[in-house]
Image (cartoon, rainbow, N blue to C red; front, top):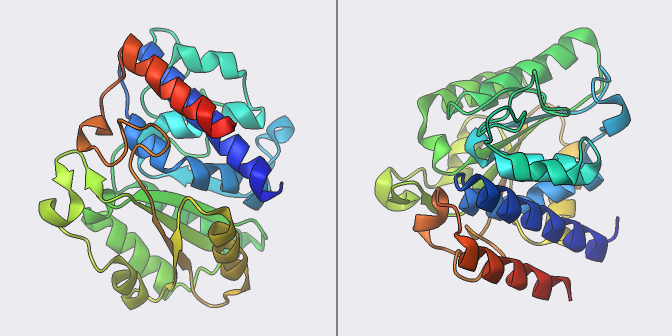
Length: 273
């Protein structure tokens, strides 16, 4: 895909996020919207995946470590062809397979159930180690939140990955600066994030998480790195694309009402044009 196609795809993913959370009357739109460009690049450009063969043992793996932003993953998978986009409206509904956190047993394309913050990176590290032990070429990707990396288990996983030289692992930190209780640097600051990952023997790349040229540069560079895992620190805007949600901590876990939904969709339609 070219840059314009990726931007359009990311915007469709954002529409799906807003639609799903509005329909559910619950969910986490802020961090889902901040991750939309990263998710679009991963699934439509970077990763070796095929919705027609979702369980291919040679596919690249992805773990949404910050599992509460399931709307971002669901909308991406739907737009990639894993299941109908229309099903996004069933988010969190009784009987729906699209629940509040991803479930690998029920959602096509989900490689790991997640939601307990801090644990997803350990699973991604295990997937990367498995590929090394079995002589497989697939790569393992994990998306973490900047609030999530306050969890100790993140750093235990990072220490192991760096020590084992898992150069088939890429960790992306969605650094939108906000978490459920406020600004990350005021709740329990994880900064300097880049220096911390470097101390655990990661190759670190800092990017604008909404710039597809920047994302391409980072993921292409990650493929050239040997003997160490890569951490991509992506600076993003929480609620990106929806005027009244951007950089507002209240939209971490709040669903838009009908009036707000209409405003949000108009914002995204303007971005299309």
